[in-house]
Structures are given as structure tokens and as C-alpha cells.
Image (cartoon, rainbow, N blue to C red):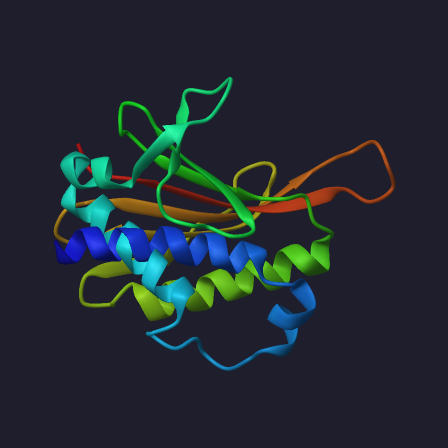
Length: 174
């Protein structure tokens, strides 16, 4: 049950972070409280991922039209989140942002991750970004093998300035 709570907290955190105004996110340098709504959601989602597919069922909400995803039954303001219908993964993405806004959101999400994912249970690593990504932070649950990626993506628009977005992707170990 604790793992399920952590999983939901992770999802909530991801959604809330995405919804935070970039200006506010850039100005607030204090670490998030472990009792903040965002941290609780991220911890809840992380717990569900660590607990496995049966715990993910508790996050499954109504279907998303024209998609193979269902909405999460946890509020994730500022991010569109879905859970694969076969309960294989959870994905959240922010709206398109300019680089400064996206970097501020990514930094805040990292802060939420540090607050929600205990170092005794989760290991954080920073990967060399793949093509189309600026940064990638990964978390792996030490006992279950569940995995969470936090990515800062860039995609060209044909205009002078590309667009950016923050993506959260998590899956249990099979």
C-alpha cells in the first residue's frame, strides 16, 4: 500500500509541477515540502509503479478519446497524463513551452523527485540525452526495478525558436 501511495504521489507531483507558472517555478528556490500536494502525488505514483501492475489498476481512470491510454484518476494539473490500458506504463507531458519555462519546470520536477523518492528506495541517475532531448533524469526502484524517466524535450517548429516540453514516463518491472 505504501508503494501505491508513492506512485500516486509521483503522478500528482508531475502534474502539479507542470502546472506551476514558470515565473513562480524560477523564483521559488526553496526545496518542496514532503507534505506538498505535488510531492504526495509523485510519491503515490512511484509507490504504485514499485508495487506493480495490480497497484496501477488503482490509478486507471476513464478512457482518453482516440487513444490507447486512459486518464489517471489522480489530478495532475498542468500535465496531460495517461496510463496504458494494459497497465504497462504511465506517461505525462506538459504543454509546449519556451526554453526558459521548460527548464524551470524540469528543475522543479527534479526537486519534487528528490523530495518524494527516498534515496533508500530509489536511485537517481542522469543519462546522456538521446536525440531530441536536452536532459534526462532516471529513477529506479532498488527493490522492484520500477523505473521513472523525467525528460526535457526539444522539437523544431520551422520557426526561429523551437518548442520544449517536460515529459514524465514510468513503468513497473515485469
